[in-house]
Image 1 (cartoon, rainbow, N blue to C red):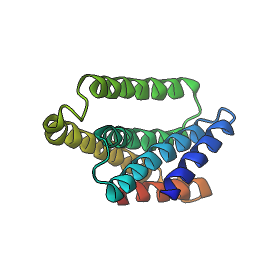
Image 2 (image 1 turned 90 degrees about the horizontal axis):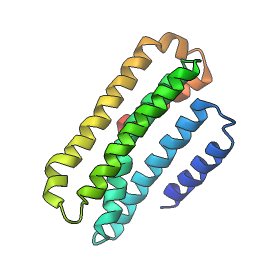
Image 3 (image 1 turned 90 degrees about the vertical axis):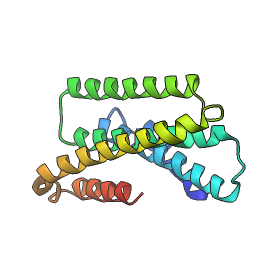
Image 4 (image 1 turned 180 degrees about the horizontal axis):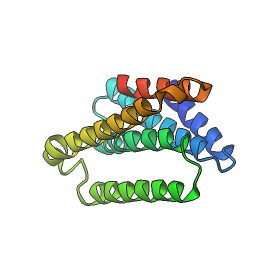
Length: 163
């Protein structure tokens, strides 16, 4: 649990000290959603009878891990502001769908829907973005291996694969 709180603190620190750098912002968001997911898992392990809303929040964070990782990988390769706006709009659309699903079909009252459709959907979305990120890294691996941030990005991607 301490790791989840430390991750949330680190995400806040990176967000406020990003100075408008998209790469730092995407890394901050990725750390935040992974920390929320980790915190949910730890709480569920020790308290399996927690309210369903805690599980719903953790699952909601899971759907954002893939897109945040993909946009983090792309942000290091691009310099145009219009690309960053497209990425933010893309994430905003995902968040809008996620919020709508959370509001209109809460986990506590639609358990079967979540278990049979929403959770597998979250896992497929996560996998899709993870595959996109991996493909992106394979295309640019020669350039990424020459920089410390590129090696760090490859390590982060391997960590998300491990999760």
